[in-house]
Image (tube, rainbow, N blue to C red; front, top):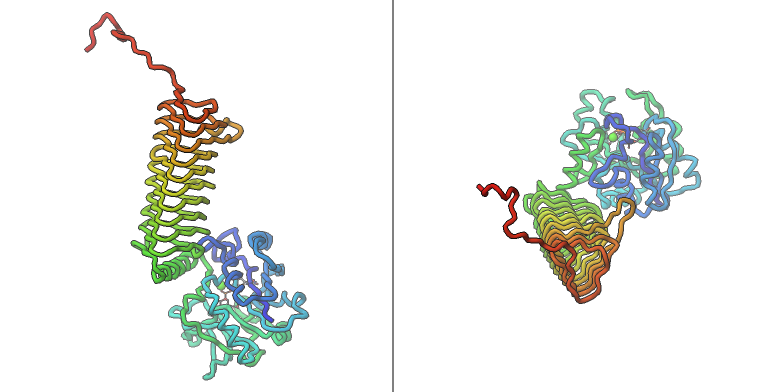
Length: 454
Ligand code: UD1
Ligand code: CA
């Protein structure tokens, strides 16, 4: 049986923030959520998050994840003290306890699986993830005998200059035999530079404790300040983009592009410079996004082009062209083979297949049929100052340039609306609507009729 405990009680003073450190975001998700979802790979029986500073906030932020237990550490007296708080909660637990620092968010799930496997096949009392760090500053140094058995872990600030030369560092990721750990936790002391109870001192009482070196030392990158948060983002981005390029996505000028690790792509997608893809976004095969676009929580169908545009919480179906300068703001669904053009904003609008909104329009709270041509400058007046109202336009209808549709309103199928109309009443199928004042021409009329025009 496996239980997972995540240390997330510290304030993270070095972040210089009111927000608990583990709630700072890295690529759309908090540090602690990243650690927790990574740990789910071992299918833990129990998931315990140790909270303290800003505990309520941490708890709230994870409320969407199932089966997470929260354990309070009211005073933050160190990582060993944090793990001591688990004792009443895991009294009857038998098996392996994975302990993860809440501020080490780049860990790969397969690394945890491997750590657990090594721990269990060797019957270790503890197994510790370590790495050879090019710059080990700030990390605890791990000292081993010739067989990778750990003799001591010394925090950076407690190291002698000679000890500090050791580049093998502690990732803050451990696997313990819970039964044995629970026995030694009460023996930890706080006689160190920080006067804290260090979890790392537990290795002095346990045997055997094995160190497992991680291949990619970037996985153990810990976040203590905002500079490291930015560095972690860069590492994460490189990782995501390299993986997608190898999987067949073309990124033009990858350094100018950002992609969340929740985004999915089909084959032969091209992402142009200065494009940002976030959240639960899917880009299907053959589509070309960018340059200069932001797509968030949206589904983009096959062979779609998106140029200099912003798309949020929307669906765009196959072969549609979006942009330049389009904003699909929220709950927009655009059908197949549509053209949504220059300077167009759509909000809570559904558009049928082969419908065009090519220039300078705002359509909000609208249901638009198939093969509709929305003329340049067509606007839905959807808001009366208190409430939003709905506009419906039937199939094959054409709205003239500068049409205003005063909602609630329903325009039928096969309707033509004359340019400059302000349509305030429902329109039946199959007709021409002219809703504008008639042009008046007064022959010979001059501003000052006595004086000849210059
Ligand atoms: C810790 C390790 C160090 C390791 C490094 C890896 C110890 C003593 N040191 O150092 O060997 O190289 O992580 O990143 O463990 N926390 C609590 N309660 C507390 C104190 C901390 O929950 O009382 C949590 C923090 O919120 C954080 C994690 O434990 O998520 C690590 O604490 P931090 O103070 O950042 O430890 P480091 O000094 O980085
Ligand atoms: Ca840390």
